[in-house]
Image 1 (tube, rainbow, N blue to C red):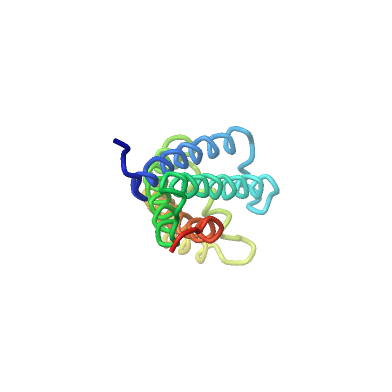
Image 2 (cartoon, rainbow, N blue to C red; image 1 turned 135 degrees about the vertical axis):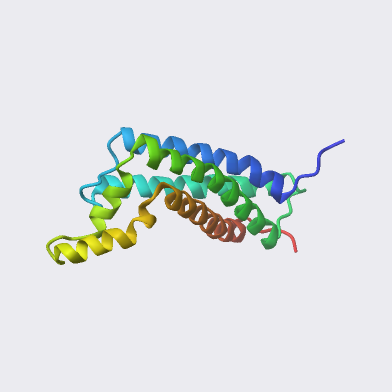
Length: 172
């Protein structure tokens, strides 16, 4: 007897794939020199970001396609959206755990680098810079970055699910 395919099961499977891809891509970006903390607009940062978005879309698209192929060739818009949402959720959980480890242990000055790029010392006084650092301290903490990674992954999964569903939709 064949096991019933569901958006949740597909989301878990492809969310795991996307989570692993995200970890590997982040490590390649970091150790391959694609992260440039000094210049946030550097080409290497763009390459890293685009690679992440393209990889995320491809894996989500393949997850929706897998669901359609194992659902008698049918895919409703809602099913495709659900698959994308679950992929984003499970990839986000994996990514959030990794981001916490990454920002805490692999690159412990990651938050400081983000903060230093947000504050231009030439445009504000030292007192204003210190006040901004105090206000933004939590936003650059590993726990906040992990939470942001989770939310971003869920939003990305929904957007990729919208696009993938529109491309692959068949059925009702």
